[in-house]
Length: 391
Image 1 (cartoon, helix red, strand yellow):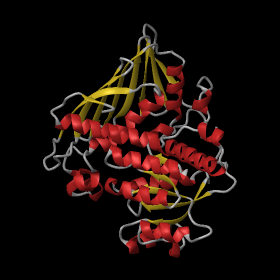
Image 2 (spheres, one colour):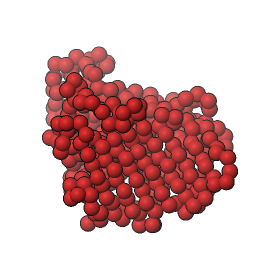
Image 3 (cartoon, one colour):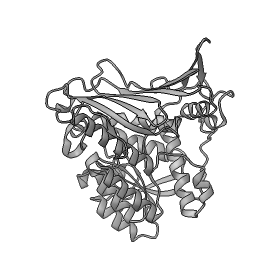
Image 4 (cartoon, rainbow, N blue to C red):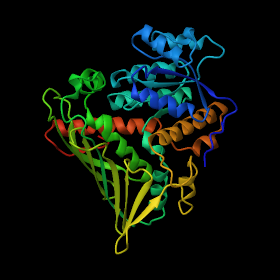
């Protein structure tokens, strides 16, 4: 169980790009990073408006001279300081991720970036190569991957409780954009603008989340080919989609399905993953994150509760409060940021063994997500045809 004690010799000096006043995701990043005292927020370029960004940073407790006008100024100024930042989180619109990630890595910083890392597999591979060459951690915020019951699902699947894996059913299908919310919301507007969102809307924005959960639960499952159909139901969003269906064939013979949707009217969040084997199935839903549903053929349904002693040790290690109390998004994100901090520290100390023992959504996960979106768009734009994963 985690009790909030700092696990590093000293907190990592941390900065942010984006995530300014009014940014929901910026608040989530800060709440997660600062919870266990493994990071200390000391600098940032919080807003495209320098005045607003400086005012906001000061309100967060950052010294005025370390609230910078741009990410360029941030990286340059901090590099000159003996106490400059060691890590940076990027919470900006998608179209800026590649250039900021690249600049941060070139500045010798560890990076935590919102997904997607970039728009093309070629760009993602460039970032991967740069992170490896500079010996830096590049993490991606697939937030709910930090929830303990994802670890429990992984352990039970690895133990063979489900039998041969046949079907993986995934969805992230909410209803909040079933009307043109972008007319009133700037945060929604850029998500449906190809210049800022890239080649997709819901595939890249939400579909990659359950996809990464499947990677954690089923680390040996490899995509062979996929087929995607995407639609734009709300006028004005084309060529970007607000709904998409993706079918995948895995090299093992199993099949997978991802429903990515922002127009599922009435649905609050709708992120679920169900893994179906020859003997049993597991299901997890982020609106009820403290329960993992285990269904063995011919037996009563079992609801496995977070925080209980019958769970795998890996699923109990990151509990923050006792069983029965709810843990959700903030705790899952905090667990990810804890792992990011431990990985950054191990990298800086050259502790290869410790680094190898840590699992978090790293640059490889980022590349995988970008490749998936790219292949989905390729399939859909050709009329919904099967495309090879590695072509």
